[in-house]
Image (cartoon, rainbow, N blue to C red):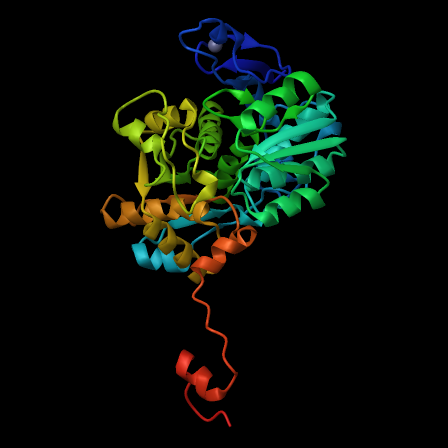
Length: 419
Ligand SMILES: [Zn+2]
C-alpha cells in the first residue's frame, strides 16, 4: 500500500487515513502548543518501484495521471473537470521588463473555474465521496468557494455550503449559486464552519490556518503543479519558484511535490521557494525577517489582492521557505498593479493576487538577485475575469466618444487616409 496514512507535521505521530479535520490529537492534548496540521504520508520506495514517469507526460484525466502520489485509493470515486495540464509560458512583456529569458508563468487561469483551486477540490471532494460524505462546506474569499461548488456539482453532493468573505466578488457568489451551492457572507466564518463539521456531518473542503481545521487531502492536489513543471521542463525542476502566499498552501503544496520528486530519486535538487505578499498584509514576511517558526497575526491587513489578504497563515509554508533556502518578500500595491499590467500586455489577464508572484520576481530581478541563467517559475493562481470590479479599476478605458475617424486617430496614433 503506497499511502501510509496521516502524519503530524509537528510531532510525527501517525494515524490511519480517516476523516481527521482538527489536526493532531496528540499535539492538541498538549495545551501549551495547540493542535498541529496533519499531512498524507506515502511509501516512496514502493511508489518508485511501480512508477512510470513516461505516463506523466501524456495528456489525460486531470490530476489523476499522478494518482500514485494522491491519497485517493478508490478509482471509482475520482472526480475531474479536466483540471491541471496548465501551460508553462514565457510572458513576453515581463521577460522584457526583467531581462530574464527563462522566466515562466505556470498559468493556472485555464483551470475549469479559472483558478488553481480546482486541483485542491479534485483531490479533496473525491476523498469526501470516497469517505461517504454527501455534504461539503468551505470558507472562501471567492476562488476557493467557487471551485468547491463546481466539484460538489460534479460529485453530485447533496449539499454545498460556502462561507464567503464580506468582500468576495459578486460574480463568484453567483458562480457558487449556479453550480448548485449556497453562498453565505459572514464575518466570523470559523464558528459556522466548526458547527457544520462537528454537528451536521459536513466535510470541510477547506483549510483554515493557523488552526489546522479542514481537510489534509486538498493540498495533495497542489503537488501536481510541481509534477507538471518537472515534465514541462524536460525532467528537471526550476532554480527558483515564486508563489503568492495567503494561508501558505500555494507554496507548501508545490513544495511538497518537489520534495516528493527528490524522495522518488527523480531529481537530486529542489527549487528555492520565494513567498510573496503585499506590503499591506505581510505576516509571513515579518515572521521570516524575525526568524520565527510560527506566523504572526497582522493587525490590519489591506491590499487590492484580496485572495492573499489573510492576516496570518500556517507554519508549513514558512518551513518550506527555510528548508529551500528561500525567502518571504513583500511588494507594494503599485508593484502588484504593474505586474497585472505587464501580464495583460503579455496576453494574460490575472487577478492582483496572482500577479503578486510575478511582482516578486520583477523586484528580485531589479535588485540583481536573479540572472538570465536562472530558470524562474511564477505561480499565477487565478484569472482576472472573475474580479470584474477590480479589472474595471485597473483598466485605462477609452472614455466613450461619438465614433469618428478624427477621434480614433487622436487616441491611437492611426495615420493615413480613412475616408
Ligand atoms: Zn502531533
